[in-house]
Image 1 (spheres, rainbow, N blue to C red):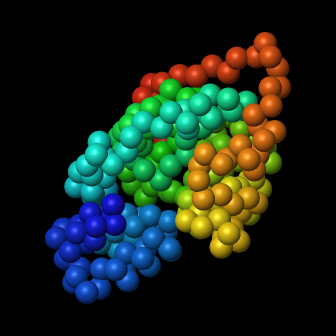
Image 2: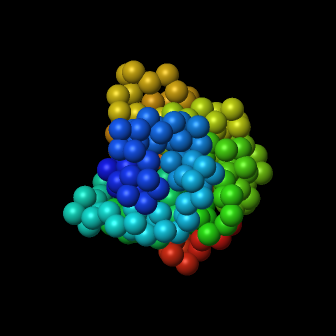
Image 3: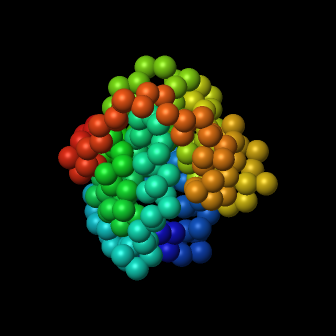
Length: 213
């Protein structure tokens, strides 16, 4: 992904190759998404970026079905919602390759088709996710994210946060830290405890039940 983004900076935007790494890092740290910086400062078409970067990735060779993660999600006793900075096609593609596209009730994605779209870690994006998921109380929200920026923003917003870090022992971001998504039940075991044995949470395919804004 980083290689594709930097290639886009050079070939499509005209940023000198020796400046790309610093500028891309600055945009990511400032806006949470390199594309936000490109749209703000270089008048880049987000949909062109999506086609030439996200959709061009050879994900079929990189992402495989994760049966263990599927089992973990099936046992999770709460509403499950995808909240991503990716555009819908890329997000759905990743979920399908992992085999977990039907384990969520919905999807809040970054809509590149909307002018001046918002994304994590902007406060507006967290409000949008709550509206999409039909949640009003921030204290009932849990976020698992690999971005420290997003984790810090969600924590300030009142969400419970779990940082999926490269090395959990070195992270001081979030309420909990893990370095393997399969360890999630270890830090939040109560979310796997049955609340009502007669209650079955309705799940719909991500590709059908999605937010559009």
